[in-house]
Length: 277
Image (tube, rainbow, N blue to C red; front, side, top):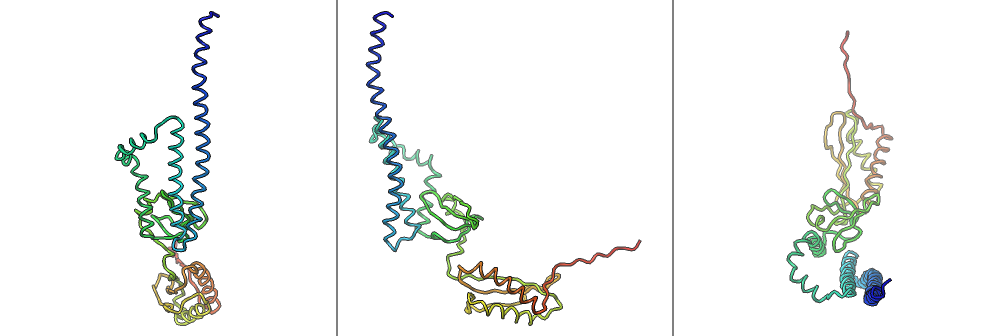
């Protein structure tokens, strides 16, 4: 190998080696900052929620929301620190981002709308953690409100993540907002049965359930004369937490009481006439 070529290669190695070492150290430092930063962001969220839990005026939804904000703020600082490891001037970067704020805002319109919707949900408080709600046809128990999304759990414990803009912009039913709820029933009896006797049987069943409220009083009326039955409508009031228990138990108990008193619950019948040959 010619002597001048060897010298050239040696010079290139001597030039590149410090650069490789420098960038390798920068890469290692950036990875370490990223790992520590991700851990610290998670811990900061937990610490924030734990600190706010000592304030009784703040409920779980507010604590979770503020914890989410702290986490994202820490992540922003981590990203800037990682960029600085590669020689990127973060001050210049911030200035450029500030100048291009309008363009960035338009590009992140969906994300910003989720943040704005989350703030509106915190201000007007249409629900709290643990409330059972229906949003745009989706029903579930509210688990968490973050900076961008609202988490629900369906009755069969399926997780549903809804963007905050979808929550704020949709009709919302909150089944847990009030302490009491009305439970409606409909029982059909035969046209040949005694309506007043059926009323008394149902009243007896209702009187034996301590979960039912006496004010407002229970309503028992004939709601409809159907094709094959007289439909009795029953309306009672109970605590919201007892809604489904009352619904299931009273339905079963009324059916058993009507059977025991000889009152039949008819089912649709059809008479078919066949022409003679």
